[in-house]
Image 1 (spheres, helix red, strand yellow):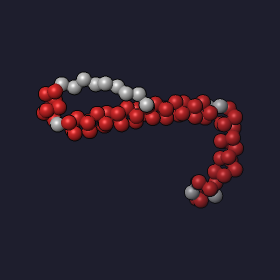
Image 2 (tube, rainbow, N blue to C red):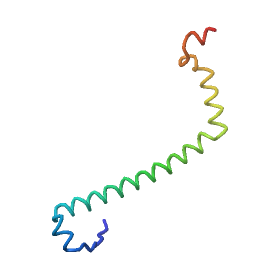
Image 3 (cartoon, rainbow, N blue to C red):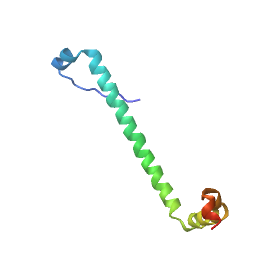
Length: 80
């Protein structure tokens, strides 16, 4: 784990209180962690997009729909 030193004006600490400043800094770190996780999720989605765009995936999707699509269509449309 790394440690970062942050200079905070004494008046700000006196005004808000040490506990409030600590809470705000901890919340800022949590938001940074969420942003990092969001970036990782976006990268994962890019990989999934590559898979979905592949001809092999498209062919398997079509075959699966032809074999099992009737399960997801209303009966009146299937029998017409």
